[in-house]
Length: 207
Image (tube, rainbow, N blue to C red; front, side):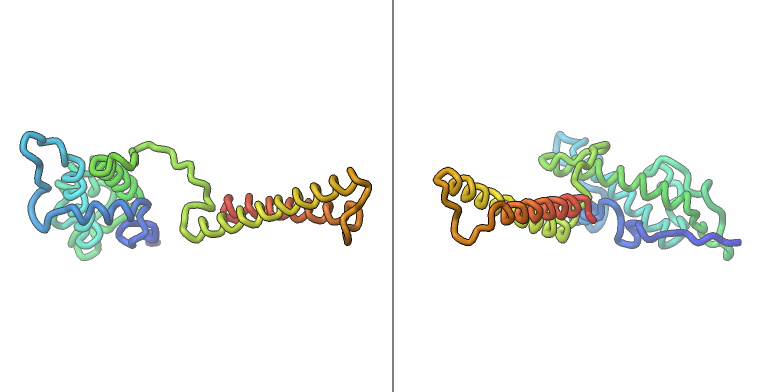
């Protein structure tokens, strides 16, 4: 029974893990030929050149089943793609396996990160860096939800503080503010604040 290969989270499907970095790097690749180096700095664009070569091999893998660049792919990605698959039914190129797709995407992640760190060192994007960004803040929409939740929480906290201050002042002079029903308003404000706090934590967690 033939097993379907999942391409959904690949760069080929425009869903790669670092697709924004890939797009930025792609704009730096010349229309033809290798990436140029500056005089006296032969290593300056080494990772970018590897990205260029790997991108060509990547395209050949997904578009042509490595009909043209199998040996070059092995040098760029560090493993033999042909050992993880077999000739397809027509004998042209290779039929991709899930193992091959997963390993290729992982290596492409590494190649992209290395090239991006080389070209944009000021952004401190390095291979092996742990991403500590909360789940809820990893998209523009998520950031907007978290920001709104923070505003609601701050507003609820301010309301508690204002009511508590009024109550304390009223008791200090033995006069309660007009319309205030003892501590009930404060209790309700505290409950609202706790609700907003829970909403904020859920937003940060992406829930």
